[in-house]
Length: 277
Length: 257
Image (cartoon, rainbow over all chains, first blue to last red; front, side, top):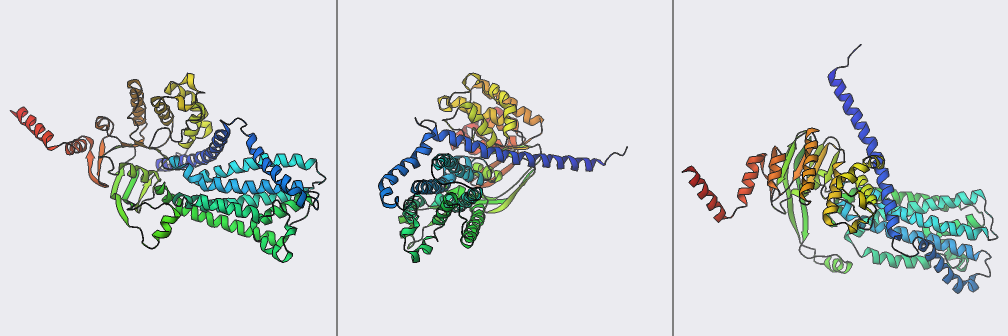
């Protein structure tokens, strides 16, 4: 039997050790992400009386208010006003919650970031996942309302909708990759962003239909990506209509570009940012 | 092996604090005055595999910054740190501990944060709990633990982390006598397993006990690296006041007679 050279054996052992470390480190990162999501979720609703119910209740109450106020205005023309309104609120709520959580994600974990070295993206994406969980709960409520409505679903419509959720998530991640870093040094960003969100709430066809906007202005309105996502999700789910191709490709391109640019920016800045906590 | 090659780390210290937009807006017209503070200045150091290096120095001398740069938490301005294998920093015990979570949840959270997988943490769970002696309080929220118990739990988890290089920053300062003994047990184990350890402490006796070599950091520079006994003594001597030094010299003289 041929005995391998000892140097070779040592090299081999080192290689396997290295391989094991890599594998374990990957599993560890996955587990860390899960652990952060789990504990965040637990902590968020631990000491409140209604707990997780608030996730659903908050948008639903807003829905009731807006419905009572505006249904006589816009409700007569649109038989699906209720669904349109609820979907708009849910999507906007997701956008608002995710961008807020994302912005605060690094600072919220400052104590950990200063003590252990793990990929900081995990902190950001675990925060964003909180918003995704809320979205999932809200969509369940939406699904219940949907079943009792005249609208009928088809597979294509559903797929288009899921696809739009993915784009929205990419867009939100892209924004958060920038804002989480900027927020560390520039705390006013949360106040500024709050104002932006309320402008966006009124600038997006949520409680009013796009059709009340003069036709020549509509295309400017749809430059707002949120308006585009809300509008196209609605027509996909409620009218089973396919989204306009050009518009959607631009949206995909912009979201992905923002995301990749954000990732580069984040990676470049995140180590430096630790000093400003 | 850890190779620290000419690492410099500065912090900018603003003379006036500007955190809000308004301050920054007006600040545009008179740019802020920053002072460059050298937390580490051209530090080079090599620690061989299986070696224990003690690090001593007064508060604010740059010991913790050095560990943070090695751990990759701070990016050095220049120079680099190269090491081989898996490194765990223990800059604080119980990193990520949340007072609102139960001890059980905190064990998993902290273990995963320090680089364990959840599977490993599950296997080592029993050992951790026994070591910390908290079998009866597993579902108690951490906020109801005494601070000593929290540190004890933190150390128990830390002691179960498997790595090649360990960075300890003043982690032995707390705990009762029985617990200190347990810590020593862990250290002996690390020693026999030939782990590489960087050990920051103000407890000079334990530095001398565990580390063959010691580095003395002063004002961000390596003042002295060498045998622990010499370095520790020189560091200790430098902290004495003039009178104390006189007393010491007097004693020496008397001994000679």
